[in-house]
Length: 359
Image 1 (cartoon, rainbow, N blue to C red):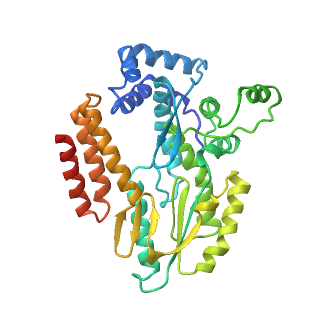
Image 2 (cartoon, rainbow, N blue to C red):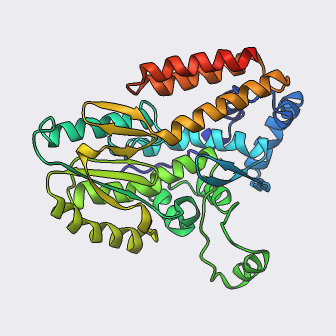
Image 3 (cartoon, rainbow, N blue to C red):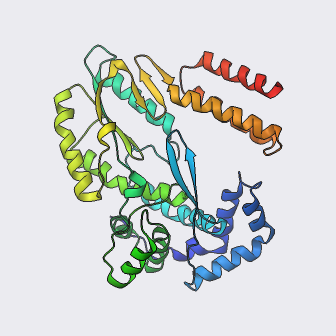
């Protein structure tokens, strides 16, 4: 295993922080807090650098809000200053761990993504089923409350196997420790005196949480590929699938999967989101449904897309967003549809868009 020392100066350098700012601000310049940060950019950048250099940096509080995507999610938003640091840390740490990830891990990685994950599933089904001439089954699983269940100690131990730089370890611990799901102030006080509280959770909304999730679940990926030697396996964050001709194999492997997740990562499979399904019935994965010979958009995804597009048009008419942002949203949705067999749906979305815009 390759170890990394003396990377802290690369993380906290003003050049890296400024580069992180330029990436961070690209689609947020109309946000009041981002605009405020930019008005005194040089002062903010160098103050952050000094705090990191002097080890006086402390992660700020989070602002919590709910979004429906499609299920209700509790999002925690850090300050602009902290989010810029997240980008700076990510730019250095991500390449260190990227080289350890398996090819069929598709979440939040360059040249991966949801559509690549669905294409992998489609191709695996075609291969295993010999183009639908043999029986084929898919085991589909989901982890219960994944982001809220990530154990801080386990995550830090995994990160520190490769990152041996004590200053970088301090910074990573500060960011991970800035959030803990379900921990009250009284429990935090007890933790500081007794050290008995087992802290859990990484916030949905932090860029670093995407990396930490992949690092954490890479332990499971390695178990699946090198211990159980599972073929035709794909994962996106906490959703994963296995394709096989043998339904009994999938049933027998399930207890071993659950045992590893509980014993090594303190995670639990969601009992209502574990199923074995014939591939000919269609496999719902990452917002799409892989059917024999074609891929369609999941109906819930379709409804959510139309609702959000209508909301963007209303925001544009009220002057909240610009024309550039509005048409950027439309292009984004067209991109989603381009990965499915959805010619008629693309026409419907475009027609509906212009109808709503002219209302």
